[in-house]
Every structure is written in structure tokens, then in C-alpha cells.
Length: 309
Image (cartoon, rainbow, N blue to C red; front, side, top):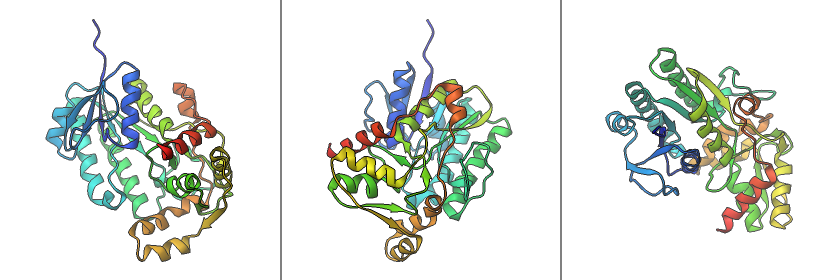
């Protein structure tokens, strides 16, 4: 009797990791869900393990027999510089020793300033220290793959939205609309954008982890046609049955707030993405794996419903 593939999910309790676990189980895989404390991750069929993924020996032991290690861990943004490098190095070592593919849940911050859609072959021209970090992490994984130490699939999403998501549009758009407050949009609300619904991100990670057979490749999450911040807010307001105003938050305003709120400093560093077209081209992924993106209306409806839960 054929044994189902085993997949390891690092960061299995996070907004993305929980959904990846669910999609892998639904596909018939055995899933080992790793968290620091072995907590429940919302899927009864998962094998729960308490593991410090930054400990290479512990992670290697937990990854024995795995087809893929899904790197879905997301430290608080204030600890990225300290936490992401050792965590990523640990995953590289575990994959090197066990033969598991690494599936890395990534963003688009390494691409920097662009004027058109972001395709997977775009060169890295990061803006700011966090963009440089994301570029460095991706390069570190890619170099390990080029050296033959592991097989690699990088899955990139745009700005996330959806249940349990924390992002630059999560609270200021959907949270505010749900509460009947005016929506705030960082940057220009009239530029094209393809926000990524969290379940589309997780679904793409899961299918790539099961079906990608290459040595090293970047895959972008498929999206609906571009919208704008203003259109997304109007859709959220219509779904919530409310009227709302749109306030654009400028870089200068964020920088001023950053003098007293550290998270605002991080936002000021990243706001450039909302001052240019923020369109992610996932057409190659859709063609290769048949991933169909969730319509904005359905994603917005689920997001607003999660604020009422």
C-alpha cells in the first residue's frame, strides 16, 4: 500500500501556516505541524510537534521522512532582522540533511521600485532594510539550491488580506470599515493593486509543495485582474452595508508617527509599494498548476465576516 507524502509546516499556527496545513491534509498528505508550543492549528488530522525551528538539530529530527518543509514562519516585524536569518539557516540545514524540498512563503519586497507588473524573473532592487533582508533570505535559499544542497520553491504573494491577517491594509481598511470608521489607505488609493487573499497564498504554497518538480523556481500567487485601493474600499463598504470615506496616508505622515510608534517607521519604509503599481503577475503559476484566484468580492466578504466572529 502506498504511503501518503509527509509535509512539514514551520509556523503552522500562523495565518498562512494554518491554511497550508488544511490544504495539504485535504490533498491526502500527512502533515507534521510545527509550532514552538505544540498548539492546535485548526486541523484535527495534523500531527502536532513543539519544535524551535531555529534549532537545526531539532528541526532536522522533526523533518525526517518529509517530502517538503513549508517555511511559513512569520516573526513579528520588529524581530525580523534578529529572527529570520537563523530560522532560514536552520531550514536550509534540515532540508540538506533530510532531502526535503523547501517551500518558502515569501513577499515581493525584494523587487523594489517597479513601473509595471511584477513577474517571477524580475531582478532584485530592494528599498530599505526590510526589503534588503527579504532579498538576502531569498538569495541564501537560492544559493543553497544552486549548490545542490536542496530543492527550492519560492512562492510570493502581494499585500495580504483575509481572516487573521495583519498587513498594511488589514486593519486600516477592513477593520475600519467593519467598525463603521473611515478607511485609511497608505499611499495612493487610485493606483492599480492586486491584493492577495490569504487562502490563495496558502493554496498555492500547498500545491507547489506537492507538484513542483524543479530544482529551484519562483512562483507568484495567481490574482484576479488588478483593482485599486479605492475600489477595494468601496467593495468592502458595500459588503458591510456602510458608507465610508477614504483617507490617503502619506509617507510624511507615517514618518512623523514613526517618531513615537516603531511599527509606523516600518510602514514608512514600505509605503513605496503603494506609491507605484502593485501588481503581481501569477499567470505562470495558474497555467502550471491550475490555481484559480478567489474573486475580490468573496475574499472581502470572508474578511469582514472574520471581524464579526
